[in-house]
Length: 298
Image (tube, rainbow, N blue to C red):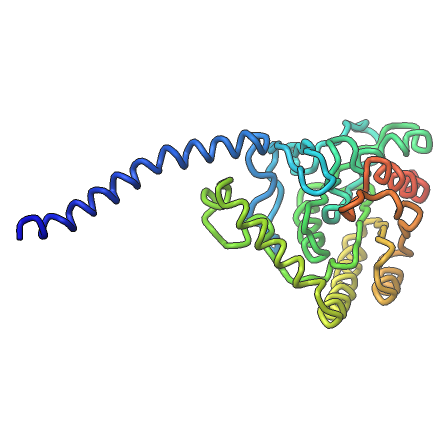
């Protein structure tokens, strides 16, 4: 009888010993994963700013990539929360760029995204090196762009805003930085990153899997264009919109009516990665060249 009564206790002690032994193993695995990913922590996290679902982390850095034909690429965020770009002349024009992973420069190194190339492309026309701040962030839809722009205008004012629009900027709110809504310390764990990647991939599929979903997003995007256009007019901020070639005609018409005639990026369409829709370094240079042709000095 005494042996039977002690069995549950022994099992409990064994389970406790296993758990205690797992802690250092998990810590070592976490450190190893962070080292492999660049060791710089997360690039963006859930945001406390009203209207923003998530935001970049000022001063963050790391290495991304290794998916498909995308080699690992370094990412750095400056003190303002913009992707690190070459420094411009403080007396020259101050241009803000907004959008999702396209202007952010998914798949390319710091300095290769098209906003980073815009300042040098404008130098001959402006007579100085424009300051170009890249506030693009992977997964941002047009509602996030408006929320971030409103927030930044509380303390700063640009010479001009450039907004990069793509077909799926009408998708629902989604926290790409924390799809499971976990506490921030847990959401940053490299151990659960594979599950987060799967959750994001499932969401990505859900917004492109049917014609009905695409049509719904187009309608939402038209509404978001109207809201952003009305705000820009009230704030009196000069704005230029550049659009991906596949953007629906209704969205193009809404942009033309609410903001300005959009600049189509069709000439750069072939300069994308083989297994990823984002622009190669050459594609980003192409986009910067097109934008530079229509951005004029004050």
